[in-house]
Length: 378
Image (tube, rainbow, N blue to C red; front, side, top):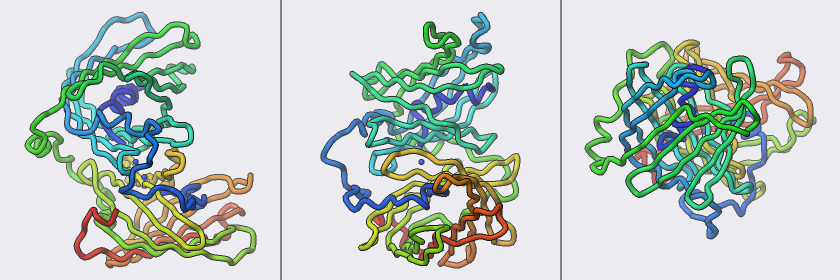
């Protein structure tokens, strides 16, 4: 587990959160007309505001154990900043964190999404070098203390990971990550972070996060998506069954850049008189090593991020591929973006159940740019 991987826990701390549904997101029917739309808070709290304390701009001091689970007690220190913004009207958050110390530079993006059914949070992160999103750490807050758990490989074996938020005040919070290699009987803390709120946020935000280095090829390929849009969506009701029954939706989307354009967050919302409501997030992450993009989706029903579609643009034409199951059968998924140099980009999703020999289109989206880009679209 490298430095940035170990940063997972903390960089989720007062840091970052989001995403359009590739696989299940676009295929699943997130169409409950009773789902609360963006801009309207549910009547019941359901713990969805538990991470509100993290919103804003922070100075962070980090201590990291260099060699966890080895008996070593050598630590290194970092100083940095974190900017956290809410999404889904507070049912999620997205943040950017940067820190520096003797052991190097940390840069990460973190996505926190609330699952209203489980009344828990799913926390995922990505680091600035890899451009991929981690598996989720899952948990909840009780009496002002948040505990989140997952399992991870470490030095060739599986360990338990525990992330804890505590000492939460309006202007400070504390985070620690601990590992256990004995099934949770004992825990060794390997990461501590104490964050202090920056009071003058308007001034700090202009200087907190530094510009990205020189742009690798492909890093700006999704810039056409930035802004506010009107959406017209057509969805095939029963893919790969021979059915030709389609339903149509209309709605809005807003796309904003993060990491100075090396990532994007899209909030997506549509409605259909026949099929109900779809509300989702897309997180697009650029991988500077492969010069490709990973597209991650989550929907408002469960706050769970699905496996990514991965690919790139060539001559203004973007193709992205992934794998999933449909009706208990493995399928391939293909995303295609076209007309990206116009104010009406076109998107299609297709499925293949014969190894890519043939493809059936099941999701078509046409967008029209809103002349005066305004977040009021949501």
